[in-house]
Each structure stands twice: as C-alpha cells, then as structure tokens.
Length: 190
Length: 190
Image 1: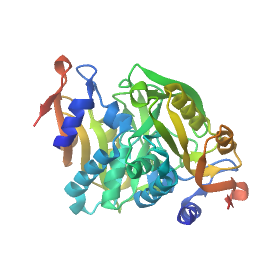
Image 2 (image 1 turned 45 degrees about the horizontal axis):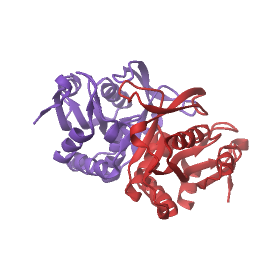
Image 3 (image 1 turned 90 degrees about the vertical axis):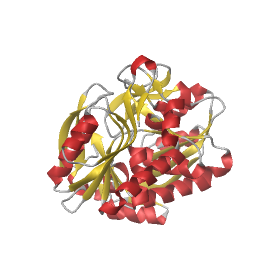
Image 4 (image 1 turned 135 degrees about the vertical axis):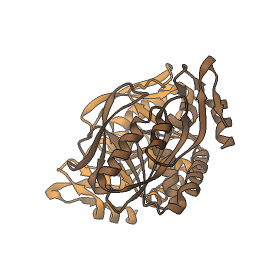
C-alpha cells in the first residue's frame, strides 16, 4: 500500500533498532481518511470469507479495526488489557506481554461477544512479537469460533510475530513490511 | 437519539446504582453502523465551528471519536493513559482518576499533535464524574488550542461530570441522558 508507506516515511520516526514511533499517524494521532482506506483494503482481502466479527485489542488497533468492521458491516470487538469494573464476570482470558509497554497483562474478551458461530477477522496496527495477537487467537479458539485471518497495518518482519501466526496456518495480510530499523532508517520489504 | 436509547435499553445492563454496563454496544463490542450515525450527529452539531482536531482518551472513546473525525474530515487524537515506550518525551500530561478502573493515571498527549492553532472537539463514550474529560480540557489549554465543545454518547446526569464541564463555559452535547440507575433499571432524562 504505497500511500501508507509514503506516510510512514514522512511521519514515522525510528526510535531504536527495535522501535518505530508511528504516533503521528497510527498510535496516537490517526488520519481517518487513510484509516478508511486501510479498512476498505482489509475488507476487500477478507470479504469473501463470511466474517461475522472483527476483533482487535485496545488501543491502537481500534481505529483500523473499526474501519474494517464498518466496511464489512459486522460488529467490532476490542479486547481489554486487564479487567475493569464494568467488565462481565464471565470472560475469556489469556496472559500476554506488551512489547511497547514492557509489561505482562491479561487480555480479556467477554463470553457474550464471541461464540462458536463466529468467523473472526483479527485486525491490529503493528505486529512485532505477536504476543497480543496470539492471545487473541487462543481466545477465539476458547470460544469455539474460527479465525478467518489477521490484517495488520505494519509488520516488522525482523521480529517473529507475523511468522509465528502464519505457522499456525493463519492467513496474514500486512499492508507494509519493515525488514529493519538500523542506522535510524526504515528498511522496507517489498 | 432514539435509536441509541433503544439499543441501550435492549443491550445495556445495570450493574449497580452507579454503574451501567454498555459492553455489548459501546465499551467492548461496537456496532459500526450505529457509531457512524453518532459520528454524523456530532459532526452536524459542531461542524460549523471550524474544528481542526477531534480529541478523545483510550479506549472506549476511540470508536465514536473516529467516526466523528471521519465525518468532519480532521485528524483524531487519542490521549493515552500513562506513558508507553514509543511515546514522545515531549508531552502534555495531567493526572486523572478513572471511574471504571478505580485508579489514578496520567493522561498524556504528545506536544506534536496539538498547537495553539487547533480548535478541538472532545468526544467520549460516557461521562460520569468527568475527570478524564476535564484532564483533556486542561491539556488543550496547556497547548494553547481552544475547546469547541464536548460530544458524549451517554451522560449520567446523576453524576457531576457534564455539569462541571458546562460550568467551565463549554458546550456539551450528550446523545442520551441517564438520570438514575435505581432498582436495576435505567431512568432516562428526556
């Protein structure tokens, strides 16, 4: 997705060999027009697969997942990291570390919003080690639902997340692949 | 907004005299079609006010704020609760308690995404005590930007948040007002 790659080059900043800051366009500030284009792209890719729900995890996944769910005409569910007072008692729960937050949290989805009838598309902003996404996959399996695939805006292919999800037999579509962040520049994979 | 009120009656559950669980349609699962209608409504209400950015706070505010920003054709910014590794060093920061989480956190917005040129519409899912929204207002003032108003999906009028924001001279539009949650039922204010 060339427009996205251009925007990442223009507005992203390389923090270290491991960390790319996309706060200007993805993780903190969001361009709704770009995000709507991302949603259309994922909807086109996975639209033939009878998807009933789009699942993501708070917070940065919500905008691209919302745009995708809107295009597909299905509900969006965003998993919570750890329990809040208003969360149902009856939840699916898996532990997952957060790459950016440097902590391990519970990933929580209410049992009321996923069932064995669901065909679920996971959408997330960035995949690095893939811990959060793999927790979502385990939650979908716990619920008896099936996984249609993973749509991810940016895949860091020098970290194992995308590969680990593909090795589970799950279709992954990443719109931009970043092969490295050495010397304070982005190396893209075409 | 009658359709929203119907959906709240149908899918919301009263947890206690203070807490309404809207996980089925707002805080955990989201209907994108309903959310797009909410976004259009806020865009119509505030659209004449030269808004340059929509500001919300993670996580439940993101979907209605995204839909509003999309309709207005301006960027969305979602404030973070506490710092992450990819957050800029240079941030606006205010402390605020979370009603649902029962903890006090930092509310953080990067200095790169707000300036004195901005006219900001705040959008959030629910207003109870209004601590998070008032932290956002202080952040907007810190940045030199101006506040166009607050659009909130559900106002709990038996809690002081909406009133406190109006007392600051800020225009508040709430789509559904809930006057009480006694006896496990919702009392709406017309």
